[in-house]
Length: 121
Image 1 (cartoon, rainbow, N blue to C red):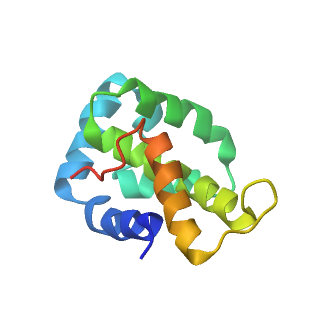
Image 2: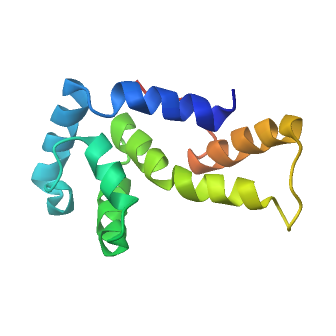
């Protein structure tokens, strides 16, 4: 399984837990852009929908919560579709073999996390 696959599996387990919902609620007190969602999983689903106009304000609110591991994990999950698109197209127009794909997954996810490619719990 690729790093992205593992992250998606983990997200299905943590994105809508009571702790995740409570954390989003606490962040929403200071960040009005986060108030429309009951869970980080719901937030990520809607950001992937047709109304991309929400994305800059929501992603900015998550970035301002930089010391919160769940906010960082939510941010990562929100950008994974774009990361997967880059991987699907390959780098410089070249598709990658499966062995290289796993390395590329880890490299891109690590860069997204600022050099810390480990899931938050």
